[in-house]
Image (cartoon, rainbow, N blue to C red; front, side):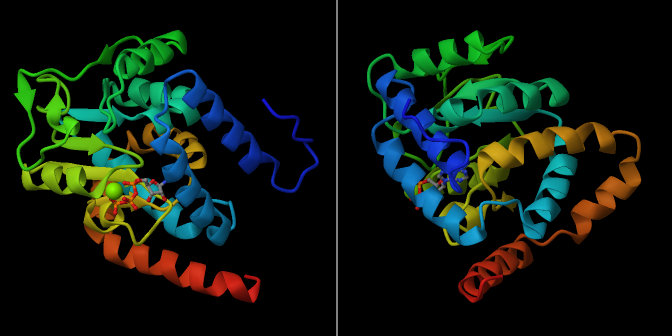
Length: 247
Ligand code: ATP
Ligand code: MG
């Protein structure tokens, strides 16, 4: 780890950069993941590196959708495993949903290293891709899924997703909840709910929200009915375009 002083104004961002570099060295995150991280950093800079109201609104709707799912699943790639293992495990716990490894770049043994990393952080179980169950409408390695996980799921929580797979999941009739700092990505536009925030900030907020909802199902469903992902993305874009004015 580099020696970033805590007083540095961008301490957290630089710490996350160290975390992702260390995960590449451990073979958890793909080297391509560094590029994805850099794109995320750029948008986080524009967003102000803080959770904004449009993200809070999406987190609320996401909590309702995940809580009312029959078979929710949490899809994990190398970037998210590196940045937020504890948040993923906590989300699995509050939803009683499994974690499933699903990655685009398959270097030998990386899926197993992600699983072992999550187990080390205390995940009770981690589902792995199989050749028994495959997603339609997708050609990459990400089509291989677990029959009891992503394949069976009605709602898929998949942060830092690739646009192609988001579309494939939707075509298979699944709802997709994503976290993506870029409100213009294909994933952000196609998902049912897009939380435009850094996954390290959004996950703890989502985990806190879920138990708060459990007691009032009707009000919760109203939240979902009123929710418009297009409107939330529009708010995010407006926020970014105002960021140059010092807001
Ligand atoms: P798409 O395929 O959806 O058009 P893309 O090809 O631009 O997206 P990918 O590399 O497929 O991007 O996915 C990475 C996405 O994850 C980017 O949109 C990036 O902004 C976002 N991202 C990276 N790091 C984070 C993070 N820590 N939190 C939230 N989002 C992030
Ligand atoms: Mg992509």
